[in-house]
Image (tube, rainbow, N blue to C red; front, top):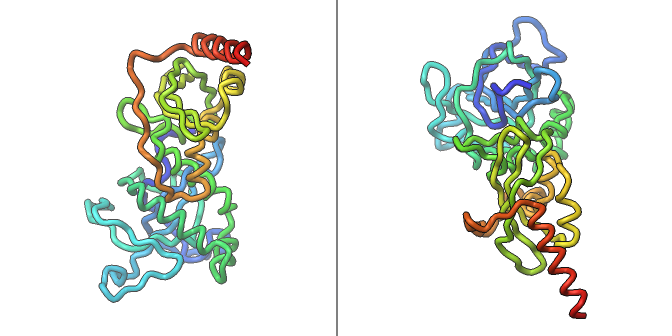
Length: 281
């Protein structure tokens, strides 16, 4: 899988058809900006994108009213020839292109715009005429947007962020990771929060994860490697954002740099606690 493209990047499609690609007629197309939604499949170079329309500058007029399917492009994004991108993202138009049909990434949309895109898509996907339009363009839009949502949540939670501040989840979601260090940082209202180091054998990433699982279940379930996607879904914060992408999370508690243990040490410590609790009953 190429690392060239990731969700939320701005690209230009050299030859974006006016009508759905499947119904395309020669001559009815032009270059258009688009937002990358991720990769449609890990085994093919296919890039699902959402169209951006400029409407000849009309979208920038104070009198312009957004249509239900539109999200305004934020200011400050650099497009072709160092021009600032202007226009609206059309959440009812999803197409898939090969890498050879698009430019390299030109800029990155902010997290706020990606959240707005998800919320707008969810609000129109089952309404007329947008449902018909989305289905007409095909490309299994629900699966594409589900992956886009997962990538966006990983971005919100800073999950698998490397030392350069780059989120690697989209590229490593199927890699197996195991805990190489762990420390409890908070326990509140039935939730246990831990700072963990996740390693795939190449890199290690620190992450703060919350769970409603009890220690007895944690030392069993977390002892085995899981994919990055599975680790992300273990987090109750992921579950909260899946239900409401704009949910306001409380600040993450900070770990102590000297209080980490490897998982075997953590497991043995928790087993001793459980044994003491049983003896005290």
